Length: 502
Image (tube, rainbow, N blue to C red):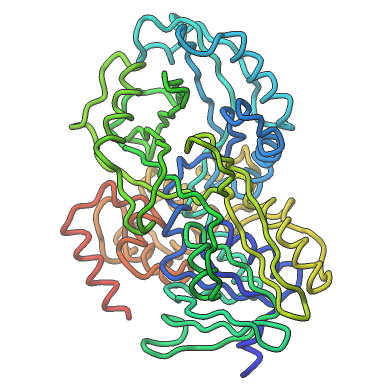
């Protein structure tokens, strides 16, 4: 076994938790490898409501530690990745039949106070009969509250964490399944099957410590690859979203209260659409088969139509997506009441081989979760470098949080022959790395084969060579959202092009 096959830390799972842990660990000086059985962010981490937020509704469930931690992370993550994270203003219309206005005011005051805000603007009260955000709503809504949270491109958040980990020396293996994890001489022997080892060839590596961050499959890893019986730690909760043609022209989001005590969001999405979600219901199937049900679709349409003046109907739906949240099973009676906090469990020690199992978590707290995992790693393997991610930047994010528009103008001046909407889209996805992608291009003709919308070969090649994209789905739905705009013929041409590069 060569040095290339021996690591301090081996991470199972290429979602936001796994990618964040690998990045933090390698940045402190540990040798690290990560394996993901599918594509990066192919599970829960690309099926979120795409928010960096404190979780206003979690205050009702007394999750004060989680809310405070999440709120404090908003501006840290925004500074870390100002290309894929941006501030948003959320409008909460007061519904007279639901939570009293005084309760909403108190909750939002606490939200502002707990958050450590510096750049995000505070809560304010709105007269919806006069404010532009009242226009799309039914006439009965008069009082509203506007507060701050942030948007994140969830799948890109994962990929950029993995990219930074790899740039710092971690091995990142996609489409590589962990088939066996067994203790051996004070560590672990991990068997891999897939892209990293070659088709039909298994590769064995050695690790001092294993982190199981497999998300919805975390119990499957424990009972399957690790061979333990009767493990039940996660409660699988399905969340589904619908994407409809743009419902209003302003740039605010809405947070709507529902009669069942839940909330949904309506969020401007990819310029031309509105994202509506999410649902919360227990799920017992295979996470890879998750999809929206008719019941969930009806629920979201009904909830949105309770507020919007024009009913939102099924024929307006352009796309849907669903994911399974692997919440720690705390015995809560209802899916929406199950804790969103994360739980870390250490099994074993340096002498016998240590494993850390990660349960729960969310996009917003992934950096802090990784720091907590690193504390446990240090307890087993000994401390190396200091914590470092709080003031770090993700690839492409080397500009100030409020400077996005200025960066768009700069990129446009550097590439005057490219369309302005394309410049803005590339800056939003890749930040300063857009220049690596574009190279010496003077016009779209210099970007190679066209695959519909403003997707060209130069971008596809960048995604294959720098971001582990392998399939059309990887390119169109996780690395970009061009799947919303391209046709079947475009997809077929892209698939043929990707196959020709193998």
